[in-house]
Image 1 (cartoon, rainbow, N blue to C red):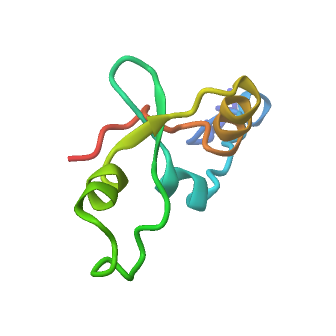
Image 2 (image 1 turned 30 degrees about the vertical axis):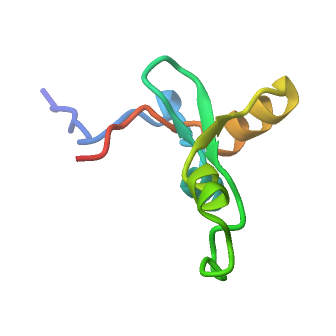
Length: 87
């Protein structure tokens, strides 16, 4: 009786495709524990000496992405955002 050889690995029919993460989006946004999508404020690059203390303090805060349209786009670009915790 001939034995069938078993292929190692996954069955080709059940293969699921992984979506690629848009890396620039993944670096700019993050997901909080409560599921909110937040972003940092801009204008942080340079010229900090000429900015007031109040402006520099405001720059460090993060803001929630409020528009549904933008949230949907970001989730599409970075589908695995917040699924894997960084150590």
